[in-house]
Image 1: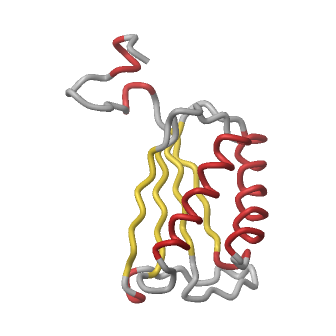
Image 2: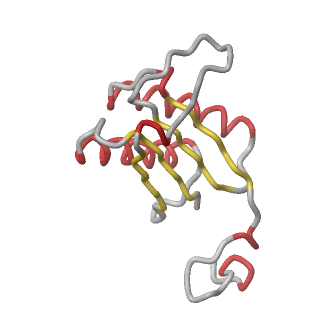
Image 3: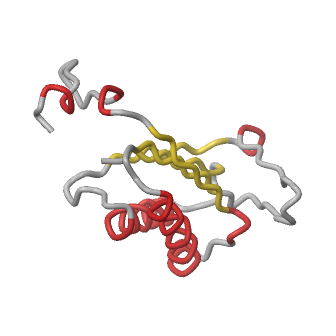
Length: 130
């Protein structure tokens, strides 16, 4: 059950466009990242222009105000699953949200079962509830 943070520039997208972006991310995680069907954990944060700074790293990328930074907190995915997820996020966000590949940054952050509590102060993975 990945937790996803999506960071975007404030005022660039309508509420409907933000929801569409989040829905596309969820669909890709279900289809290519082995996310459980009933789980959806997304945090969407909108920043002022000066609060989201991602400059080129000599890759020849041209960033715009439509920049999207996606962080996926997860455990146990293979390199192949991650690579496929990056590819399908790019393809689907381009197709359904009109995004440029230059405006998409994705990172996966590994953690363990001990790093999660879904409420009541309990580590549900460790207690066997999940």
